[in-house]
Length: 420
Image (cartoon, rainbow, N blue to C red; front, side, top):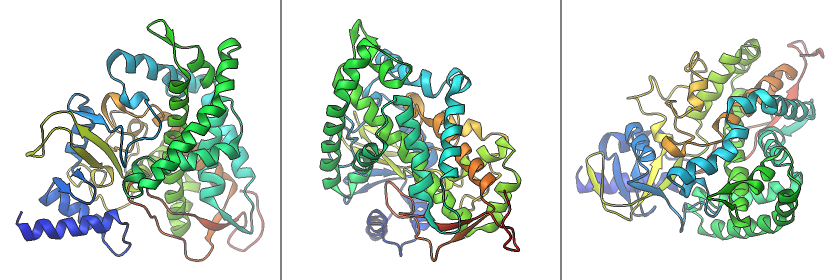
């Protein structure tokens, strides 16, 4: 690549990072994959990795790369599963995995609990007047799931903490002040949790906080700070992905009546709904990028990256890599039919949940939340009418529409009220 081409690409990437709506993000990502798959961005102070194979390789290499722990883009949770390796990681992540990822958890009530949450949330939506599907559906289903799984209640307070913590992680690449607000929210949540942890050490229940409060590692109980970090991590990561991808998908369905009709026609086909959810995660990745740091000198896409360098993994670009996905710029609801569930595991092609040993422990929970939310909405709503011009997706590292204002209808095409 010539110096002029490199400067031009740097300018275009800077516009993407600034969330300039006039820039063609897909075109810039395409140039990165073709011309500079490992590219240093001064604006991000990071090496940008854009090809699917390279992004996956970095995510799987826990020896050459680590999660960032400080500065813009670093998780504000404190020390969590992301920072653990080997036996410690396996044992501690297992505490949570047994309750939200295992087949036993799904069979023993998790699926039914999420279904009940989705059904209640959809039933509470108003028909015939403007509602914001992001605020009133996409957020509440995963947020209520986490608060019920932890048996902590206080949904409104958790929403405020979730918003602050969620915006203070990878999104703080462009807003360092967001990280300060996130750390404050984390401290507030730890203070809130302290009496609950103390109580559940003595009188544990069947909830995640009790599981963490009574767990031991190397014959020592987990400390309050570590338990708080785990809960904050679950709150942010567990809600963020589902809320944002559902918001983007619901916007798409509201603007594409044929796609909405297709979902309604096939809502009883679980495989078809899971495939739709997987394609939404590929096409509308809620987390567009993850930050890592090199441990030593490494080679990425033929380029030597020195040790102790920040690396920005562009999941949004990897998820549209034509080397992996046919016709990647098209949204195809049936793309993953027959292999949709696999996309919510470490064996999947899509990368919204990472890869390797640190694959997101909540991926299966996100699948259940998305499927039940979509099936319940399509069962109770015949038609979604956009309330004016719907806001587009926005954001660089975290991306979705700020709101999805629509009017929901039970009526048929003649305007006569029917029960869907």
